Figure 1 (cartoon, rainbow, N blue to C red):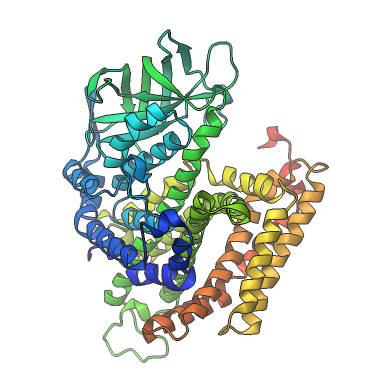
Figure 2 (cartoon, one colour):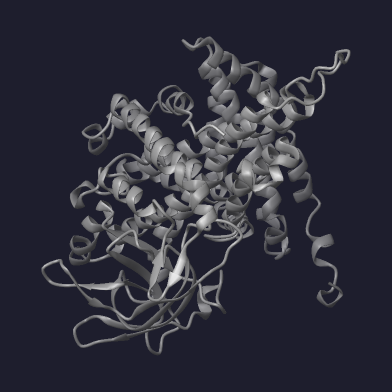
Length: 584
C-alpha cells in the first residue's frame, strides 16, 4: 500500500473558503500576531510530510510489536522513541499551547487538522502527545502559577508527557465510587494512594517524566479533587529528583492500539499537588476531558480518511468481474466500476469530509470561546458545549462504520493482516468507548446541551444555520429546504422531549443516541451544501466537480438517515423500558 497522503487541498479549502479562518484570526489580536493563511498552509504542509514520512511507517510495525512491560519500564516499539524525539523537537506537542510557557500558540481550528493527519498515520503514536496536550490545557486553566511554571514548559516541549487518571476497577463512568485517597501533608502537598486502570500513556520510554492528573478523595469527603502527581519528583531548580511512588501494575492487552501503553497505575503515598479547589476536581478534569473527547472524535475522523485512501486505491487496482451492462470478454474490470463498491466509497468520503467540516467548525468555536469577547464569546461557549459530544460520538461511530465499509471493499483480503485495513477497524473500535461511551455522550447532548437550557442553544444554532443556507448562491431551493426541514424537525422533537422529560424520566436516556444521530446526519447535510456552494467556481474544476458529486450523493442517499433516527425518538421509550429486568 502507498503511504498516507494528507488531504491538504480539502483542509485548506475548509480553512480558506468555507470557514474564513483568515478573517477570524485577524479579528483576534492574540492570533493575528501568530498566524495567517500562509503560515497555516506551511504548517499543514510540514505536518503532512511528518505524518507520511515519520509517523506512518511506525503504524504496522508498532501494531505487530506492541508495548512491553519489563520490570519497572514500559518499552515502546522500535522507532517510537526516535520519532517522538523528532516530533517533540519540531514543536508539535505544544502546537496549540500557551506561548507564555513555550507553546506555539496556534489556533485550535488549525491544530485539529494536524491532529487528524497524525491519527490517520498512526493512532497509537499520536495518543501520547494528545494526552500531553490535554493535561497541559488542564494545568494551564486550573493550576497555580508555580505549577504552571514548573510543568508546562516541559510538557509543551515534549520532554515530559501527561496522563489522565480517573477510572478504577469498580468506578468507570460513575466516578463517585473512586477510592484513591489524598492525605494532606505539612508542606502543603498530598500523599496519594490508590489504583487506576485503563490509563492511556500511563508510562512509556519516550519521555523523561510522566505527569499524572489523578482524581482522588480527601479524608472525610465525598467530593472528588484533582492532583498533579509526577512519576519523578521535580527539584526546586527544575531538575528531576527521586521516584515518587508511582508504578505500573500491568499493561492492558487490547483489541487494538497495541503500541499505545494502557496501564494499571499504582500510587503508594506518591506526592501530589492540588489542582483547582478541593472537591472540584471533576470540574477541572473536564477541561482535559472535553479536549480529549474532541481529540478522540478526530481519531475516528482520521481513521475514516485513512480507510478511504486505502479502499479507493485498492478499488482502482483490484480486477474482479465486469461492469454492469458490459458483455464479458474474458477480461476483468477494476472493482471501482461496480455500484456497490462505489456506494461504500462514496459513503465513506461523504461522511469523512462532512466530519472534517464539523471538526474545523468546532475548533473555530473553541478559538472564539477562548479569545473573543462579549456576545461572540458567550455564543461560542454555548456552541462548544452543544457540539463537543456530537463531535466525539458521531465522528467515532461513523469512523467505525467507515473502516468496516473499507474492509468490505477489500473483500477477503480485508480480513487478513497484510493489507492493513483490519488494523484500522481494531484501532477505531475503542474510540466509541473511551472518554465516556457514545451513549453517555448522547445523554449529555440531549439531556444537558439540548434540553438543559430548554432548547435555547439548539434553536439559536438552527436559526443561524437556516440563515446561512438561505444565503447560499449556488444551491437549489429544493436542497436547501430538504436540510432546513430536518433541522426544524430536530427543534420540534426537542421541544416535545423538553416538555415531557419530567413526566417520562426515562425518555432522554432511551432516546439520546437516536437523537444525536438524527442531528448528526442533518448537520452533515448542511455542511455538504455549504461545501458544494463554496466550491462553485473553484480554480480547480475537478475539485469543484468532486464536491458537487459527493454532495448530491449525500443528499440523495444519506440525509434521510436523519428521518429514520428521529422516527425512533418519536416512538418513545415504552418499548424499551417496559420489559422487567429479570426477563433479560
